[in-house]
Length: 395
Image (cartoon, rainbow, N blue to C red; front, side, top):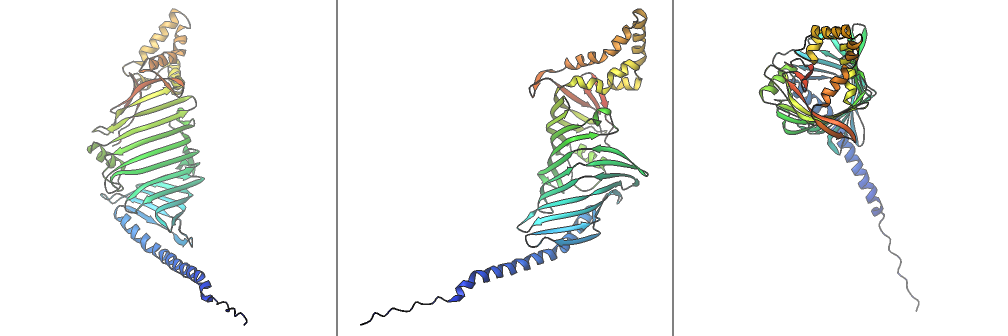
């Protein structure tokens, strides 16, 4: 009797098509979802613009387009503009125009937005369009995390930013830097109700032109601060915002700061507030190394060599009369020729000794330093008994 071998059973071929069919269905569903989300960009953008306009922030876009299929949304806006209006007076506070903004959002992480800016930008005072600034950069981007109505944190990053003042047909450089970052985080309240924010400002290779020769020299800065006392983020004139902050007992707490310019290194912590007449008031505890370099940079030695204008002397040594100093130096020269000049030329050494007599010795980053308070009294900036600057009222 011969062995009967059963014929092998054939598996149904439809099983081989399950995975490709499911993949095709998923791709179609994802495509439908992406195109639906893209179609909602205009709807949501218009609704967001309407909400912002009620708060005094008017955004406009010359031409808008959406791309980024399949995993992200790229909203490109050409020739965008921003106008801030005072809700109380209904007048324009600021107008800004720039070349292009592209906002990118991952479909699977819609709470995180990244925006890329293309310069240059023009920023003008709403009440005086002739007074404007030109801002440019090599790379500019921003990131925001959170819901549009309640953002949790954000950041601005610029490579090689420059700021120039438009003076008719010419431009005058105001500030520049190699790299600038500003990070902010909402730690209490809401943007519409007494927000408290923490900020971190980082500047590499920064310089401020036209204010003081010392500020024109490149410096690096890293400042962490906490701001409280704000009423809201609604656009309003800065004097009004400062008045609200002062009335609420608000202040700026310098949690940590470090500034370096060549051999000069300064770190500081403290709290600054505002007086009833709008002047800065408070105290920073500073530790400084290389401070002797500041004396000639401030020009104190040159002022004494060339004769001291009373207005300048009032700023650095209130109560001392310019004529008294000049008479003293003249008397020294008459008594012993050349003595007055020697005293003038070494005046910076005396000032440096006065500064070093303040506070106490310290060590900063392995170098000898001094720790002393930097006081702000009704707008006057005081290092010990020396008045080194006067800050005008903020309102």
